[in-house]
Amino acid sequence: MKYFLTLAFMATHTLTFSQRLHADLYAGIANYEGDLQGKRFALSNTFTNPYPAVGLGLSYNLSNRIIARFVVNYLRLGADDKNNEPGIGINRRNLNFKTNIFEGQLGAEYNLLDLSVRSFTPYVFAAVAIYHFNPYSTDTLGNKVFLKPLSTEGQGLAEYPNRKPYALTQLAIPFGGGVKLALTDKLQVGIELGLRKLFTDYLDDVSTSYVDSATLFATKGPQAVAFAYRGNEIHGAAGYPAEGSQRGSPKNKDWYYTASFRISYLLFANRDANGFKNRTGCPKSVY
Image (cartoon, rainbow, N blue to C red; front, side, top):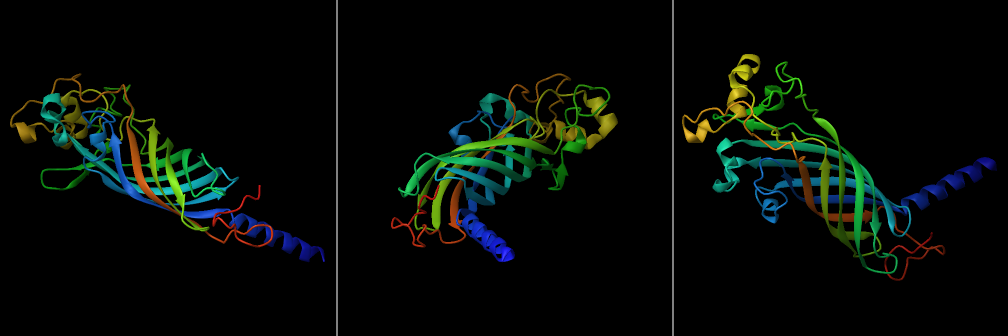
């Protein structure tokens, strides 16, 4: 008898859990803010070379308004000095980068309205994430070249002990918000904007000043010099900048962000204590 009661309790617990569990799909665009953007957080940057972003997640209703969420995202980022306005000067570097981002985040969201009695709500969220990136560019023949091993700003060189190599897997703080609409008792759709606070300035492999070209050539070879400054490719025999000349700005860390369409599907039909669906078509409060 006790085994039967134990199994019954486990089945009831599992059913209750499933009635609060949603599968989430995200699809949208991604972009970044950093040293290859002429204007930081300008609306025009969002629509300059946007890249695709997709994600899968699970969300669990802790209450009618508080939701725990886990999301795995894949997205691409990139930027090119050629897209900057000529008057601001940084386009003369002729630098560019791309990177794939793999991200896993765990966090919570808060519904400003109660979806058990309304059909829509704005919401906010915050999370902690681990992400992996690896910036690369292409040479004049179109060959992909990863930038970190080149130490384009002297990272890891004995001559520049204060410039440490950057890690390709790091922590981030995602946060943002959106609006979601309950179409049925199982299906919700919405739009979400998510920003990532980063703790590196090397998402784009650009952060501070130029190092001595002879030192870089001797330790990392001609390819490192060629990718540290690429102005020669468009300005002819323009000289490599002097050591200490500004290449980027270490004052502001890099960011990336996504704008996504979200679909959320309740894995099992949610029913009230009598086994009937809420007449509004939305999950009835059981908390």
